[in-house]
Every structure is written in C-alpha cells, then in structure tokens.
Image (cartoon, rainbow, N blue to C red; front, side, top):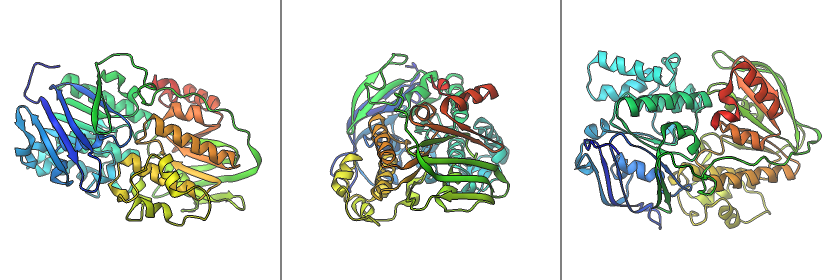
Length: 479
C-alpha cells in the first residue's frame, strides 16, 4: 500500500439497504484502499459488489435511494460532504451497463460531456477527448451516433468518457464484460499505465479474475453483502474453489441429428456499409455453435437475422418447420416488460412444465418474485431473461453474451440449461467473448470480422486464427 494518503479510501462499517428489498445489500463492510492500490472485488452475483462501487462514487444514496449507515472517507474527508462536481474529479465510476451511462448521441460529444461540465478550456477538452479515444482504440468512431454502436463499442466509449475526467480513483464494474479479447488487452495496457505511471487507484469488479492478472490486484471477496475474505496480490489461488470463473472442463461431444434446423445461405448484410458478405453455414439439432470475434463485427446482428427480427440484404436464412426460437438479448432491459419478476415469468408462458417457483429457485432468483425486474443486478436480470426464454421450450436457442455478470455457479447453471435444449433435440447459438468457455462448450465455432468469417470445429478455427496472427482470440491468450 502506498504511503501517500491524499486519496486513500477508508470504508467504515458501511451498510446499505434498498427500500424494496428485505435483505440489506451491504452489511458492516470495512476496508482501507491506499492511493495507487489495485483491488479486485469478486463474489456471487447479487452479493453487493455493484452497490459498493455505487456507494463509493456517491450514486447511492444521491441518485439511487437507499438507507446508508457507516462512512466513506476519501483522503480523510467524508464523501457525503462533497459536491458532485468535486467528487466527479476524484472518483470515476464505469457502470456495469454502458447504456445506463451514455447520455449523448455522438461519440465525440459523449467523451467531451464530462470535461465540458467541469468548465475546462476548449483546447483542454479537445486534448482529453482525443487522448481517451486513442487509449480505448475508438478514435475511428469519433463521429458515430452512439445508438449505432455495438455493445463492446459502447463499453469502450463509457470507459473513455470517465478517463477524460481524469479522476484519481477509478471504479470499474465488470469492464471486460462486453469487450473482445483485443479490447481487453488494450484496456489493461491503459490501466497499467494509469496505475504505475500516474498513481491512480483502481477498484475493479470482475468475475473473470484471470483478465486482471497483469495488474497484480489484491482480492476482496463479498458474499451476501458482507466482506468475507481478503487475498494479497500475486497469491496463487484456485479460482474454481472460490466460486470464480477460471478453467472449464470440456463438455461431452454432442451428436447432431437429422436435417439442418437452421441454414444460412449466402447472406450479406449491412447498415450504412456492409458488415459481411456471402456468409453460409448450417446448424443441426444437437449442435452448439459459439460465435466469437471483435466488437462491431456483426455478431449481435447475425443473431437478429437468425431470429427473423431483420432480413438479409442478400441470401436467405431458413429455419426448419416447427422451429421455436428463444432469444436472449445482449442487454436484458431490452426484453423486460413487466413490473415484477413473477409477472415477467408469466408473460406468454405456455401451460405445463415446471412451476415458476421451481424455475426461480434454479436460476437463483428465489425471494425476488415481487421485485421490479429493472431493480435487479445486471447478472440477475440476465438470468431472468434466460429463464423466461427457456420456459417457452425453444428448440433453437439464441444467446447473446449470456455469461456476463455471472459467477461460476451461475455459468454452470446456464451450461446445464443449454445442454437441456440439446437433449430435447434442439440447437443452440451463443455469442461470447469468453474464449476458454467457448472452447469447452461448443461443437463448432464461427469467427466473425467484417471481411472474414471462419467456421469449423474449435480446433480448426483456433488453428487458423493463430496462423492469421489473431492469437488474442485463442484460449491460451487468457492464461
């Protein structure tokens, strides 16, 4: 821990209780984070990680109502006495869901928004914006409309907008969640420079601790709102034993049966410019296809085509007769409609099957029946949308980044649900940036980039990516 105390964080007996929940989100959490420290916060989905970061940044209770007890001191001063513009230059929060953070319609304007509100000179605003865009590798997007960005591009933008404020303390809530492997590598080069070169303090919520190894963080574990353990930097840990996401055992090989359930025949698609051309593949019952590739490569758009939500520019997407599609969107709030979790589960629910109570317990959402779905953590929202999609018994399941916000136990639940669809002679397509998990789970892999698509067995695809020099998209890049 640094000897400097100018921006030390002192958390004293912090408790947070939301008005619509029976259980407290945080209970008597105490911790000291020195200036220049790198701290990873991990623990089960819904254990209070996001609440801790929101409270550190002043979002709770200033903008998110909650009963807060205890104290947070920054450099010896309570953050409760700081006006927002002062706190914003000292502590910056990159939220879990980038859509919750982006507030303008243009990329350059979004990054400039914070510095402009600090009333900085125009040349300083311009310099900060360009530095931040370059650091996140999105300078080429500077004039793009924010609503046209992919999920990963939005996440890079959200990070850039906070970096432009140049806070002394940076809080990241799952910063790698929507980033492709290249983006993850670039992000941690930037963060390493901020910590080691500029003495910034870094607090990161992350389920995939492997991604943080280069920063050598010390680890704090939360469970049910309490701080339950601490581990020093560079200690070798068994992540699986701690309930975190580490190595994955390969799933048993599936046996495709029958004619194709889905055929993609010479498909081309684009918005203002082509995303890809002449894409062809088929998927039979009993197969799991993982789609990987860089942000903005068209993975989410392809799922929308497979679901029939948009039509190809040329070519055909053919679904076999009797196909029932289940689609889990990348952003859960795009497909949540009801006022309570139970009402959401009842929406268009077929008769028969497991009871709602059984399905909520299996998805670890028990006790949240009457909660507003949008008040759940992002991980809980994602499990809710997976559960609602599965309740309709689809035989073609399309999953867009389903593992974001999930601890190891919840990922294993999702894997079991995927295997359940396969056991019913269904087929599954899953978009993911978790390359080791894709390698363990999928029968086939489709790599998508604007001018390149490679489809085959995992070994074939990863071998070709190595030959191309795209090692970032191979499993060994994570270890």
